[in-house]
Length: 361
Image 1 (spheres, rainbow, N blue to C red):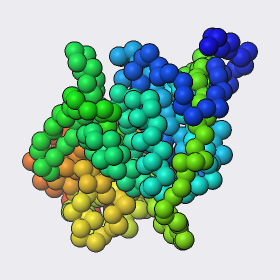
Image 2: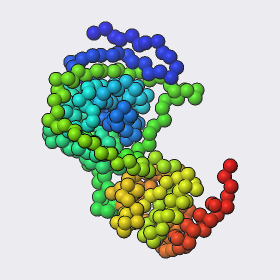
Image 3: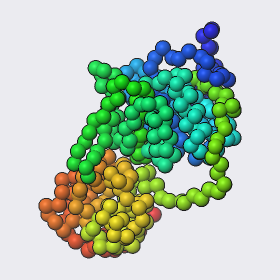
Image 4: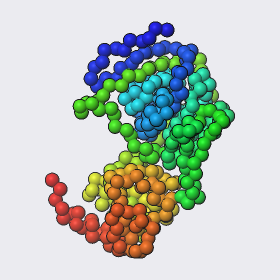
């Protein structure tokens, strides 16, 4: 096969080396591949996919590997461009009307088939509802291991193995898991664990990246045994992207009305510990920590939380943490940049009053 001639480069554009309509009959790359499954919400890329692309790019650069993004759905030209800009070397596009919305059987069949053809070393997926469903089924189908809800990923320079870190036993244990014998090495990561890497910028403009686009003809393989009759979607907050978080624990005594007002005044959002959620003071979508979501705000103000590890793992990537607690020995103070010893409700009330007096232009 003749070497492809790159198209003329234009500022801010993705430059495709090839546009290959095929059934994955090309030889596998001489380099090992890290695959990232990019979950779609209609025609929109789910944020955790972009986060995983950035992490995969870093791992691949470290080990001399390629990053391949898997995009499945219908009408996918823009997500494919976004994947290349986000760090992918190749994009496998599986485009078919039967892939919208997500259903288990066709996605499992297509992914398992593609993996068996190309044999990637590593497969990364978001720990969303669909990602967890698909990852578990693929691990069984492919007879390989799966590390779920990872808090970090590394490559062992000596062995080339993926080291997947998870937290267990209420945050008291951090375990490193490897899969030395079976392939691909699979891991799921919750949204918010890794940052979205900045797109390649040159002189303030979007830099050029070249990539290989492979269109996979999947019509004969899309034969779902499930049929979606109705779809009900609950709109909920995504606090993983919040820049400012006002977080309440046991010490707020249910006064989440004050927290919501503080979040409104600061242009932020509200979060909660598991204790506050279990008490029924706020819904579970606001829960932060090991059994909630992982966040990375610019500022996290934590009111009345003791600072248990299963909570603090959800804010450890925050740039600035301010903790308020009436216990001078609260473990939360060990994790904070600034501390306030005092009653959480009294401090929230005073802060709300002071912010109300400030005129914001």
